[in-house]
Length: 480
Ligand code: FAD
Ligand code: NAD
Image: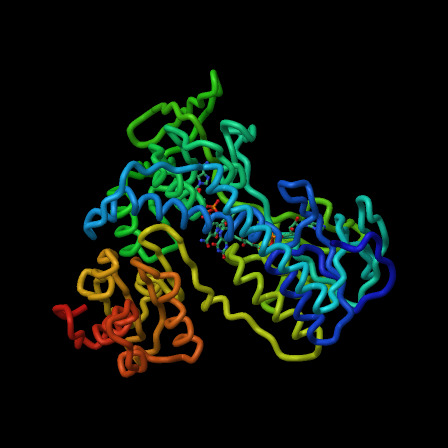
């Protein structure tokens, strides 16, 4: 449980206990710094809980539902191929949600245990940075804290759309989409980004007819174009109706249904859905986080302005995670938290923005790190590409996962690995090898000369590395 009231002087005050803030707090305490963490999260049971968005309504609950829904989907559509036949199957949505809640509870209380073990003080309340390295805590535990160093980690919140205001019932944000009590017959999603695709997949696997309305013409513009194209093909094959270049102009709720009006290349259209998810990006939580007198500056996009070491414009004040520039990813925030803790303790610390992996946890999974082919092409770089399809990987076929590919991009000058792009089974795990390789400035030849166990999915990474040099063994090499 959080401390009722805390006063006084600390080495470090952390505001926010998401994966950026709680990790920073634990690392500070490990380094011998007297640390307090102020957080205002209230969970769906109405209790203070640590872990922020990630553990409560983000990474973890979404992955729990992705797992349950994929198992149901396999039961209905995948098992027969193995000769496994089952009787009538049905999904018990409340039981699925309860399982998700148990995992969330286990993990969030695990952070409380870690705080206790590391002697991080937890104060439940809303923190506000004041002038002179002071933090005012409001709420039932109102108090004033003083710190030698302050780490801001207040995270982000979902963007709102004036044309589709969230009402918590028929029109929901990502948190609401984790709590449906039944499977909506027709589900609309505004935004075919990471959240739209993951949560759209959850409900589609359970039987919803899902339409995703995406404003951009290009699908997954942050990913490698070839991989994004393959992902779009696979998602559409699964029945996700992804409509690109569509702008939502209005929505109307009537008799428990939502009529969504939108316009795109083919003029004006309407869909009627039972539930609508708005997933159009997130914005940093800066409101009420600092007083004007604190002198804290934001950047032109509204994030807290920081340098590459996450230092703000104020001495000894740092900011990490979704609150600052860069991808809004839990592991990016955590690494920034560790870096800042190390810097405060007088050690070295850094985060390489080019080596932050991204993953979309759909089936197939999509994962990447480093430069895309279009990045390199437009920069006029000399590069070589090697790719390998999972359709030629024995383990993938045994797992019923023979779709997608591994694509590695290496420098045409010195063979250094510049990017890795994977769509296929367990891409989220496979990407780690390539991140490590890039961290060590490995070449494609280093991966090609590394022995990979047989039969494994990782052999596809090995073969893609061989393919960079035109010597893949289990596919026909094509000169690129
Ligand atoms: P947050 O997790 O947002 O935590 C901030 C904390 O600060 C919260 O507890 C908040 O209540 C508290 N707070 C805010 N203001 C104050 C204040 N003034 N005083 C005190 N406390 C305050 N990322 C991944 O890497 N992988 C995934 O699979 C993934 N899945 C996601 C799925 C969904 C549905 C969503 C919404 C996000 C997902 N993300 C994922 C993104 C990930 O959740 C965020 O990048 C991550 O949580 C950011 O961490 P953070 O610590 O910066 O902020
Ligand atoms: P996103 O940026 O991934 O996708 C939002 C999409 O909405 C974009 O494609 C954008 O073009 C589209 N869009 C914006 N305005 C629109 C409009 N008016 N009409 C139609 N489309 C519109 O953001 P998200 O999916 O909301 O996720 C938020 C953040 O959470 C992301 O930064 C993501 O990194 C993080 N997240 C990560 C994971 C993961 O790592 N697996 C999972 C979920 C969320």
